[in-house]
Amino acid sequence: MTVQSEATPDSTSRRRPRRRSGAAAELEALRAELANAQASNQVLAALAGVTTEEQACVAALDSVCRSFQWEYAAFWVRDPRGGADCLRYGGESGVTSEAFRAATRGLTFREGQGLVGSAWQKREVVWVPDLAKLPGFLRAGVAATAGLRAALCMPVMVQSEVVGALDFYASELTLSEGRLAALRNVGVIVSSIVERLRAIAREQHQQKSCGKRSTRSSW
Image (tube, rainbow, N blue to C red; front, side):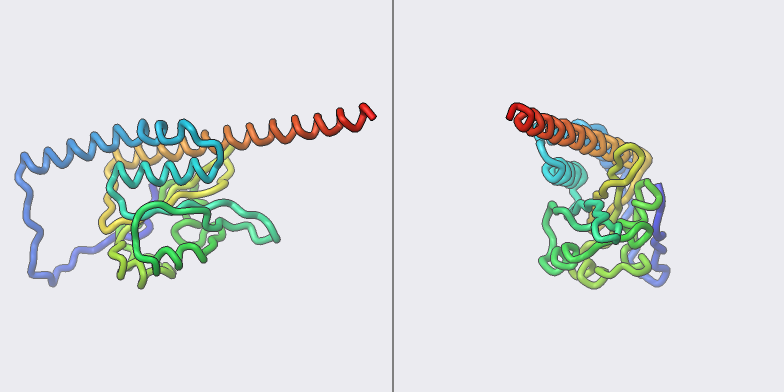
């Protein structure tokens, strides 16, 4: 995992966070472990009936947001057309302000650019615990207004090549080793489904091509 920025506690703040009791902290940890364990199964169940890459990505976004109670997510699709190889907006899930949605829909990312481009370049989950400290984050203002303070992004890969990405936003987003492992597993599942769907599309295209050639030869 790559941490894009590290939040620093405000030493001038007079209010200190209330310490949780041992029992409360243990219960919260157990809930987090349960959510981590269930996340992969829930994504698998959500992807069972999908027939397109868009359906697969939206289903994965929906499932992960529900599992971890994150507010908003989007998926990005590799678009090499026109000589400008980039990841463009593909769809979204969750609830946030219309201003943040609009700003998201209009973006594209080259490899290494921004949160999404960093996940593409590193081919790994990239976590930003404090979006206000992310250099070059163009949606910082609308994200803060919407209450979105943290984010992460994971690549979608087919045969070691990045073909897309999933990013998630929340008011608070922390990563334990268990959660990171769960997210990596989700990335593997989504990547496998996308690869399978592309293989099916290739087979169908080949069958149509063979059918057209057979029809011509019969004349």
